[in-house]
Length: 361
Ligand SMILES: Nc1nc2c(ncn2[C@@H]2O[C@H](COP(=O)(O)OP(=O)(O)OP(=O)(O)O)[C@@H](O)[C@H]2O)c(=O)[nH]1
Ligand SMILES: [Mg+2]
Image 1 (spheres, protein in one colour):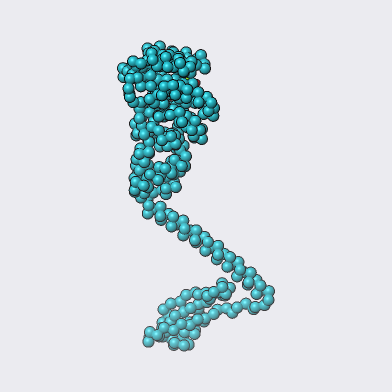
Image 2: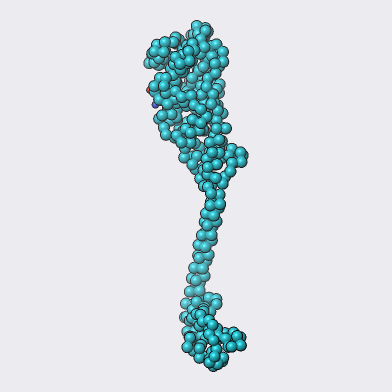
């Protein structure tokens, strides 16, 4: 600096005014290795600016060895610069994503999908809901409208329908895999329609494989005070139907069938063909795994299933798979069984109930 001032004084005279002084580096890669320089800007009274550059140190002596050191260092610096560029790009990308999120004011749709899948429904089922949401022009800029949109979409995509009193007698079968709650649900339905709604109800069981099964339904019929018939074959079944001609509802309890044993499932068909029921309700347990639900549905639906009963809803916390079951079958849901108590633990759901159950459990 003192040398620079010396030069200014020499060139511009003692009245020169210093208006700026700063440390500068030589441009380019070579600048990284050069000693710092001082740039001083001074003016005369004529206000004509003059720039004087003064190099404080000369370059170190150049020889072969220092040249290769220089090249290596230059390479490393180039690499570092490349890395820096990458980091900058990444930072720029994530800030674009952040800005996008902020401008939308909501989580991206992928997060909404994750949220749906976390209820226990499949990714495909979540996509059906998201597609419906988009098709209905839901405002994706507001978390609240997405939330409302999801509820509305599910409500549009499911159906609720309780058994219809079609004619006298209305014949209703309950079918499903073993232990899902068919007999208990038959008893609940009988109690509901007979004790609470004063319909004339008769029960038929075609589950004669286990003595306990026959005793179980007879006990329920006794408590509810309604008649029950046990059918060991098609002829018994037709006779029982004749006896119950004057009933409003006839509920038929069937033996549990494994979805993997199509011969067993087929045995049911004999009865269904002998006298076609008005409705066939497939009982599916909330504890069934999603992949099993698919095989259950494909084994039973060809029997002419008209409704779904979702049982043992009290035994799990997640009910997203209920949406899958409804979508795979495209059938209405008639009842939800929420426990062992007859008849209290049978719910006739509303659409809102089911939407809440699927989303919140
Ligand atoms: N937690 C719970 N248990 C239930 C429910 N429904 C039935 N159960 C119980 O599940 C067990 C089996 O019920 P059942 O009605 O005999 O089932 P099922 O489908 O007739 O069985 P199978 O005739 O053997 O195929 C019994 O202990 C019932 O009390 C329910 O909604 N929740
Ligand atoms: Mg049973």
